[in-house]
Image (tube, rainbow, N blue to C red; front, top):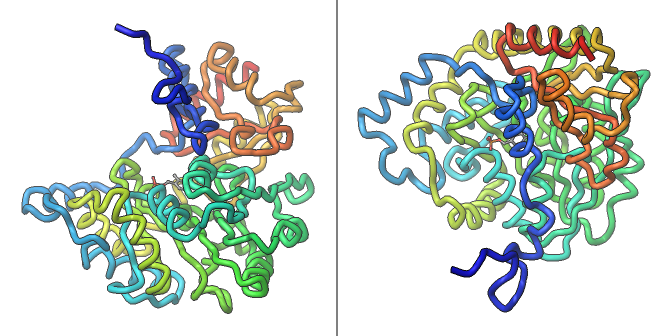
Length: 402
Ligand SMILES: *Cc1c(COP(=O)(O)O)cnc(C)c1O
């Protein structure tokens, strides 16, 4: 038998040119290291506790009752589309027609891919906030677009990563097709302010850009007495008609394996995104769609206690990381903390994260993987805090031995 080679089929590399730079992800490498060393995995962002029991039971009921076991409707089941529209109305006063302005997707990941595949022509420039969620770069590449990173800069005085609006303005060219935004922002934990969003909206309108906004952490925003809250970009003047808003049940209800996501937008944009989506998964997650329709209708108390529980975890890990000697950028949103390792006498996040499991038994992710300008992300390392308190406490006690 011929040995597997890295080229074949006219002698070309197996992986096509668009995806060549996206071999395996750091998450696979780090999770394998976690297993091999028995380290606590604060790398990948999934909760170690499932979401509400009643929502799990709703999924079981749907399975038993034979709801969603066969292909659900292409746009998603009507109950879920209605629940998504009602959620946007109740939370933000935004009104969407469940029949024409909501599309259910296989998680936010498919929503991102389908939006870019539908809206981007080869050669179009797509501006994304760097560091960015890893699927953005790959989805832009699949669409043949050119990614243009705008770097969020650490602001020591404010204790957060900040968008430089002048840098954003300068990145826009006649070839810019869309802005791909993310607030609350993974991995920095930055929540864009009303003033920042106002300026972004003005720019998008002035330059007639489409906007795809990833708001999967909309329910993980922590008001530390400064009034921080999640404001959807679609709620700003001139934005509803040019914005595809992406949501997902995974992060809000702690069922990341169910892969139920959605977009809300205009009928025209929803139709365009559906054109791509129908040939990716066509449909997905049948019975889970029924369960998430119920989840979105949970009372405000669910969302508040979910958020407060995560805030306590954020504080536990932030304080522990500070005590262990890291510079901590305490996040205003998401379930990630970005730290600076330079106070520990380190400067290379890759080397630090590769050694950390052996050194102290904890896995983290080097932020540099989320950058095109790797040097800008070199000293930053991300920890996830969506874990049981005792797991976080053990991780902190291990990190203190650094
Ligand atoms: C987790 C995550 C996603 C993916 O969400 P799924 O619904 O699991 O596909 C998308 N964007 C960001 C910023 C995320 O952190």
